[in-house]
Length: 488
Image (cartoon, rainbow, N blue to C red):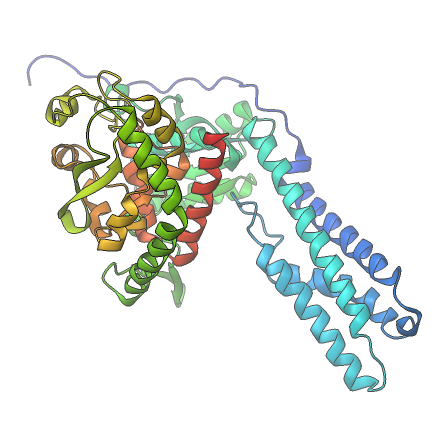
């Protein structure tokens, strides 16, 4: 003992907070009812559209089945749990299932009619009902999804959310919920029986409102409606009664699982009696799926080089005429498994290109990635145009063709930075399990240039763990959309 006493921070007394306006149209049971009502109405409108303008020779066959079509589709959508509440849904989530439901309903009714009345021909009417119903329901779901996301982004709709566990993981949950308002969850405070001091968790912004035994008082005063269980100081055996109390108070509960760094979309849930067992199905970056990805990379890079060859020739001429120096800029980068390679770009700067990466790395903030304009702005007029549209990256198609890079993957870093970041940032080197990419999951989420390095690493590792060809295609489409917006 050194004679000094260290006191734990006292929990802050819960105060009544003004919660966001509760537009129940966009959440809870009213939201589910709205979606069911919208789908029902649009399927009926599709059936009416199918019957209007049909040739007279088809008017007697299948009219009854056209009216059976809407409830059949609704039953399939409910059976496939498309009306189940989820914290977050992308605009396109569920659309393939909608198309599958309308297709299965139409085919089933045509087959049933053929068995019951072989001389009937309901196919033309049901085909029209399928077409109109599919288009209308998909359009309606896109419209409703867009409206809900907009309401959430503007915080018109947000569920006051308590985080159980006021440590680093809890603070990370708070950061993510604030950074992504489209989730519809607004962090208002923490519950923790033994919270870490503020100076130990500097990223924690919301107040610690009390321990887990203060749930009732805190919920009454704050209007909380959702609880996220992060890593709390309380033992797990004490959290089970807490979860039961949340259920009794009709609070939604979410859980950050242990070993969450290894959890991906391929997680399998099994049951050993009453014991749930999660199977962690990892992606093998050296497996056959990535071999297919690399073959597709080569084919796509050849096609893109042929397609963009006139643009690349024009840019090469513009770079040559804009300032003295080489057309291409060569820079060492760290790629898959820590191997270095020379990455190619169109030169966008004039003057000296002396390597000052070590000095620059030392001046960057602890959580700041390099990029953008570093030091004095030496960009040429052509260079500014190329960087604003990312056209300076086109020569990296040759890197893809040589096998140094992929079209999609984590962006490669300079060796000097990679060495420093590997020591400074948790799991930084994990992103090097796959080939670097011209574009990546972090970049399409706005993490370009001098942005949060920890966020970039988190997004990159999520990409590696959840990789699929569909995800690559999605990233390419998001990149094209972002490039179009930047160039417009």
